[in-house]
Image (cartoon, rainbow, N blue to C red; front, top):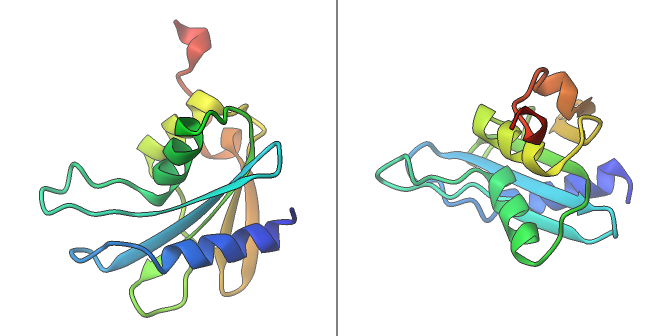
Length: 133
């Protein structure tokens, strides 16, 4: 699957965001190496800390279905009722990605101007992973 199609799935997932507090809606689409795609949106909570990001929602859905090999994730976010924009994963999401993905895993960020592709190593250099244990 090309990255534009993956981003389209992230944009669709963003429409399902539950963000009544921040009104910042995020969608993610995770591409498995077998071609399956798992989507996720951010899900907020009044207590804030139980909030879950779109990226983790997609990854946890995939892992709970037995998936362990991932190729790329597309992410788009922005204020409610506005076009999605450039939205990098938070530190917690980057660490979750590092648990399951190699340093060359592709992170595709979207905006009105198109997409930008990073690797996990670009966004989380010197990560803590299994090799540190």
